[in-house]
Length: 283
Image (tube, rainbow, N blue to C red; front, side):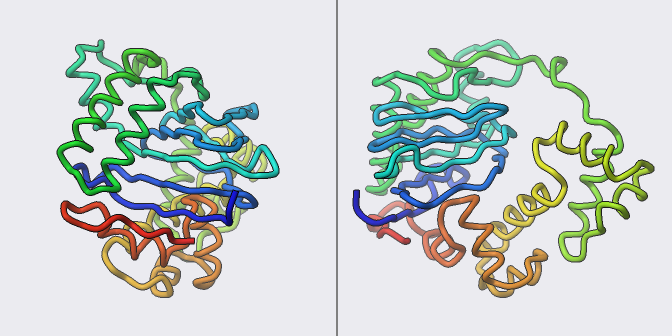
């Protein structure tokens, strides 16, 4: 494989659907979550990724699926790294297709994180290629077909009643962190604020959300940074507003989560509009 390269951009017809095309060798994704789904087609090499309590491996031709809120990481599973195309459809887009298919009410989930389904790989790859060409009609049609295929072949429906409740101290601690991106409290102060001790809070927080408070806060900061970058703010100002020590600190966490640095992410936000030219790679 050649050197690492990645570009992250918006779907041409559905502006809430992001796409990533990348080739990584030494890059490692930190443990993180997404609000929506992740569908990735491995085109070359091997990706190894933490998923839940285990480690999965996905080789060329396989499809990787990560459900919303599931903590996962990612790194090369072979010396040559891996290349892939990724779609990030939000929950409401997937749920809309599920409703059209008359799937029973509930949250669609995909039990298997790695699928051997050449037909699914082909249709997901086709969505990506149409998006790169700026063909909104083809991309939106293919996206609907791809999601319908994935739902019909690989999804289950989870009733909302089966979702375990979040302990009140974790919910309160999470709200405090969301409200204090800049200057958050220490673990001791956070525990005191929600009426518990540091270690029990740390254990309950990790059990409920999959990450310790400091790592969870960095994920919230990255999401807030994305919103500010989408508004056109420069990375240095975004870093200050979201609680990162400096722009370098923002860049490190941003790239570990999204695969691209903030500058490349911001420059690509206009890519994918109807009539726009094919995106150039941004490392």
